[in-house]
Length: 219
Image (cartoon, rainbow, N blue to C red; front, side, top):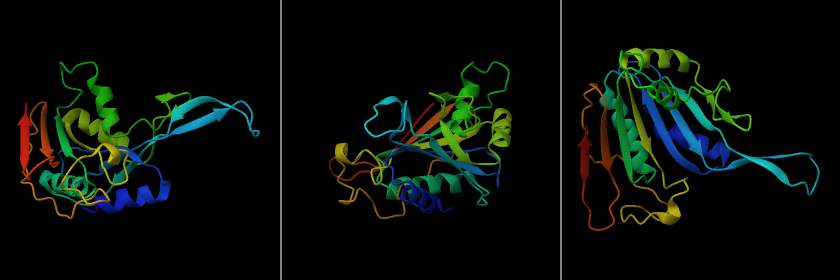
């Protein structure tokens, strides 16, 4: 699964720094995966398009949601792809969240919104800032994935890249090259998801001192 190439292609096309990257999948083999890139920057709006006019509003640049249609038959393959991309882009860690279906009886009020956020399903303009959408996307199956996730649950991976991101000035990680990268693949051992209830696994990469490897799991 060539996530790193997709991410680097978008970074090259936009020329914008990244705040974070999320990946969302339902636990059903060969279903599409949604990759969302969260950019740092603002759109300025002016009362008049003339030289010297002062901006009247600042809106965050929308995130980019992309659909990945590569085939997979095991969630650990998605896990490995997320870790490899995060490792090579210099992220400090990867947080993997497992979430139950948000349409189940007893689901909390905010769970449907979390599911929409995970799959970047805000492209219809229902949610936005100053009239600007929070997400622009090329994910034709996002709505169907949200419905499926509502029944079957879903997983989401989050990491913050140093290479191409806003974190290079605050990163003190001895595993990184001067460009904020690491050579792949990621060496950490994968932790199989349970897909039962709410669970979070954090793969830690960053090393402020002597090299060590750790992976912590919490319920």
